[in-house]
Length: 111
Length: 115
Image 1 (cartoon, rainbow over the protein chains, first blue to last red):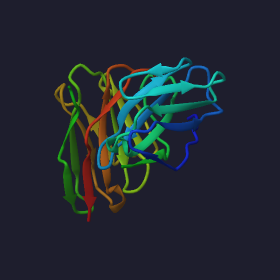
Image 2 (cartoon, rainbow over the protein chains, first blue to last red; image 1 turned 90 degrees about the vertical axis):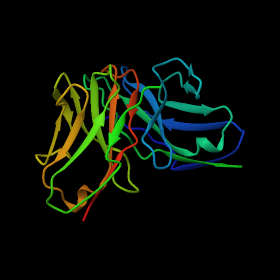
Image 3 (spheres, rainbow over the protein chains, first blue to last red; image 1 turned 30 degrees about the vertical axis):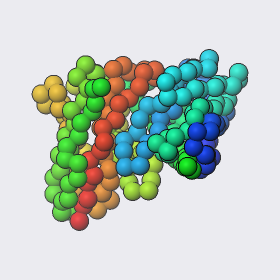
Image 4 (cartoon, rainbow over the protein chains, first blue to last red; image 1 turned 90 degrees about the horizontal axis):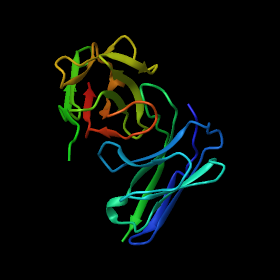
């Protein structure tokens, strides 16, 4: 399974933007970049995914480098509820569609 | 909003006992998964299930584990003879499509404690 590298932890202030980086230098042409998050004591939750172009949804934006070897999840205005572990996952094509989670980045948000 | 539901939320069992964890996936989904998370560790893939058979399983998913979709709505994980190291949070997930697009929806988890 293709690997990603994320910082172990990051801090943010409430209502400020947060940029969560992810390196994936061994990404293959058919891998999609997925982001999930896990709030304390909850199951993982889908955030966003993309292939080559930048993506926006109601939760976040995903900026993908032109060579696809890195990406950045952007939370435009962090709230206390955004404190979670954020996982950057390269999802290979396979019929079963499994996700393989790494250690993720633990984001803390200060009021 | 549709959601994946899991029962029980917490189960305590003695080592060597059989445990069944139950999940109700989102109704029109076709792909089902079990994951586990040992306290303080990462979320680990156990098994994926599609078209009434296992699509893929990890090394963790040995002969002590089995999955079943007995009635078209429930998706169960059975651990035949629990060990202390099976203590973990178990998450069920479902998805509407396979491949590598689309999102997976996770339940809130079932905490298993083996004594």
